[in-house]
Image 1 (spheres, rainbow, N blue to C red):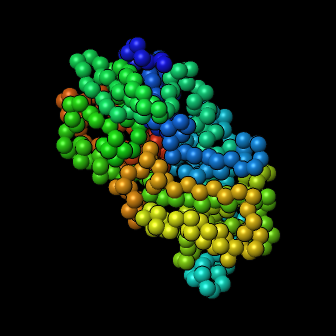
Image 2 (cartoon, rainbow, N blue to C red; image 1 turned 45 degrees about the vertical axis):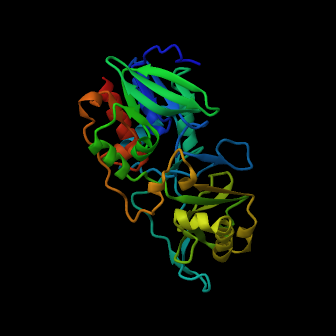
Image 3 (cartoon, rainbow, N blue to C red; image 1 turned 120 degrees about the vertical axis):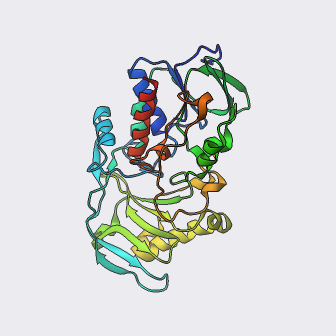
Length: 366
């Protein structure tokens, strides 16, 4: 396995989500030797696109972040142009449904045009991950390696990782870039010497964006709801889906997706029953045709141990205020560098924040 010879890297990046990959992309372009370690067998982190019945790569639906707002997110727009990836506007033509009770008919209202407009990436968010991966030198990314311990040395640090079958391996690097949620790092990685108590405490207090959420998506051959003048959007006080949108692929398969309003604890107690209730809700709202999807996809991020900890299960009531973490202390200062959207002061929690953090991390290496 590359890296076993302990050849020091300029930087070892933990996490192959958008921020980790973009950091590696920037460092490689600057001539740095870096290595990206990813605990999962797939790349992308919370950027997860799932396929439907069609083999066309365009027919992929996002179960993590789905939208971008080019009007105020210049980094993501520049990156997509650099990678040659087209975007398309979120479908919003037609009426929105308001459901106040599962026992009363929903109300139709004119859809309010969102400003600024939201867009999706053709091929799903996975298309961006694939393009970034293709731009990195071969061998710079190693999936299936979970970092368990980092030891600081005089000139280099040693990073211990474990494969999915339990094999231990080590790597050495001059800098460590943590491109994973701070809570996850605090819960799963041992730092030697220990990080300052103030930093460790702050890491555990940072909510991992989207980690407590679940999404439900139903795929159909065509967007039949548009025949009735509906946009595919709905808001519900009855649930279990509290917000529903049209996730159809232009000139491709159709889909409705919804954010689940049940908390992580409630979903665990309900089990598969909440998924059946979600399909029944789509039938209530959009008619009998909604009850026969070609495919159903569910992603409960709270059940992903590579994304969420138990601290992330309580639902968020508002968008957190994200900021840079406290000083790492004299031993780790300038050697441990934080990336990941939760450390971006300006656009934390968004894709733009992941790129903001990546740019800051790459600049810190020089």
